Length: 266
Image (cartoon, rainbow, N blue to C red; front, side, top):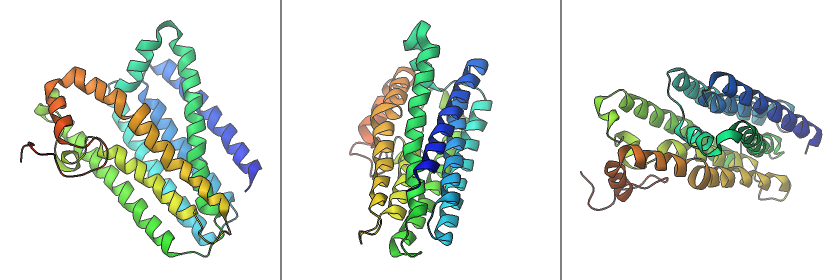
């Protein structure tokens, strides 16, 4: 474990999220926060892959995957933010915080920097694993990462297309992947962090540090399902879509894609 490298990455993440706070205060658009966060995690992961001590081929694969993930997600959120509209999750937080919103947002973004470090640590462990590359687990990890990035891209594209339709003003998206999960983009975002765990773990006891990568999917599941992902977004959808979204909740899984529940429209 290169603790000095990880310390520098932690400092960099904290600094950039402070800059994200400044951008939000100047523009009033909180969507830029997630844009900056996505690119920052990607840059941290790239740095970790470059300076890790693992096999060269392993580090190149890890670098390529984290770069593609970061560029795709950061660009998607950036384009959406530039197109207008406030992120309902941040809008809710800022409204609740009232006069102390500026300070509480700064602290919140530093917590996001800590969360980002946990994710970058998983990328570092994936790159630093001394096991010969590629193992069977590495092949499974690559396939998982490809499926996750592609699945999230498809889900985002389907939702973007729906938002341009007349039904979007009062309806809810139930097309494509959104027919089988209320938040397929969140599911695939979680799945990519499972891939880093597969890259990092070693069942032969040579690289026990690799098991720390388990923190990344555990953290993402907790955040997306219980904290800053589904809960505030669904609260917003219930207020804006009412019974239509409540009916969707009765028929479609919140997170894991699966068959629609009985009573759903065919």
